[in-house]
Each structure stands twice: as C-alpha cells, then as structure tokens.
Length: 240
Image (cartoon, rainbow, N blue to C red; front, side):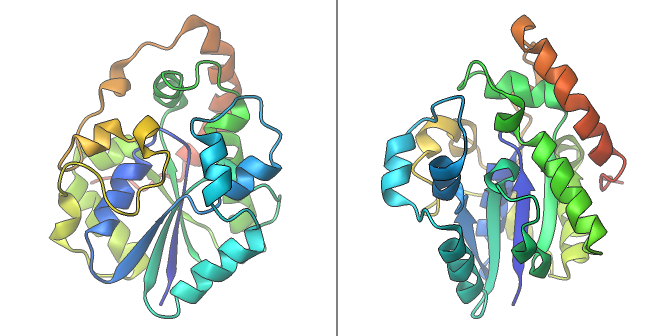
C-alpha cells in the first residue's frame, strides 16, 4: 500500500481534491495531519481560525503523525492532504517514501482568496515558497514529485484525474468526480472557516475567488511569490 501525499498551499482546490479521493473505497483520506505540529512549532505572524481548538485536539509531535500515517498505509492506501508550510524542516526525509503530488495555483488567485479569511497573509502563510523548496528537495533525491495545477484540473476534471491516477499507478474511478453536499467525516475542525465552497458543491466547479481582484496592499506579496511559482510552473502536468 502507498501514501499519496498532496502538498498544497491554501485556497488551491486541495479540499476538493481530498473530497474526490475520499469517494474511493480503496484508501483513507487524512485532512492536514501536521496542522497541530505546525501551529505549535512555527513562528506565526497571524492567528489561525480555531487555533486553540486545533492545538487541543490534533497530534502535536511530528514523529507520531508520521508513525500513524505509515501504520495506516500497511492496511490500505492513504491520501494525505497537507499544506507545504506545515513541513518545518528543510529536509523532511520521511516523504521520500511517499508518492508526492504538489498542487499549485497562480499566486494572484491564491492570495486574493486567502485574504478573505486572513487579511494580511505572509509568504510563509501561502506555502508557495515551501512548495518550491520541497520540489527541489525531492528532485535532488531522485523522487521528483508530480506537479498539478488547479486551473488545469478545472479544464476537464475527468481527463486530469485519469492522468494523475495513471502516474500514481492506481485505477481511476468515476466516483472521484462528484460528492454529496455538506462535508465529509474526515474534515478538519477548521472546515467551518475554509470549506464553504466545497460544502456547497457536488463536484469540481469554477471558484468565484478565481476572479476576485488582488487587494492593493498585497501586491508586494504577489511579487515575492511569483519567482517560486515560476520554479514549479514549468513542471505542471497539463490537461490535454
């Protein structure tokens, strides 16, 4: 059995992809299992919604999170939805044993959407720098990850998911294309702050946030983020 490790930034359709994989009967999905560890150990510039509740209910030790994921994978495939910036070490060697997928979205769209919840995000908050670093780390160790893009996915979700499953060496299931409204049991306790669009959906749909203007005060953050996005852009799996 394998661990499929989705490394994303926030507001990248990562939750919709988690819902997609949750429709399969041959794997278990985990929603941001490293979130507690991150909140306890990172130098945060912004308070996170439900932060204290997360710290009280999630595992806070990285090694225990890793152990629990690997134990689960002995019995079934595991799909981990996680944020790139939750990996606090420069060289997280434990992911070398996993099947890694990096999900990206153009930073302008990501930042405009993210700022609706956290109004003054930083480069660390949006994860693109860390995603770029993790890509280079994995490539250096001959474990080059698959890079997928939310806009490419939305062009034709079925074709894109078929290609992704093929690269992961798992069969595609058309069950991955739709889900029931309202959430899934695996949702993190932070879902009420972030997952409204997915809870109101029944499949992959165009996000209103894709056309939101970027607030003027966040233009410097966009300029910071773009070089890291460009590093990953050239490796995107295309939908054709």
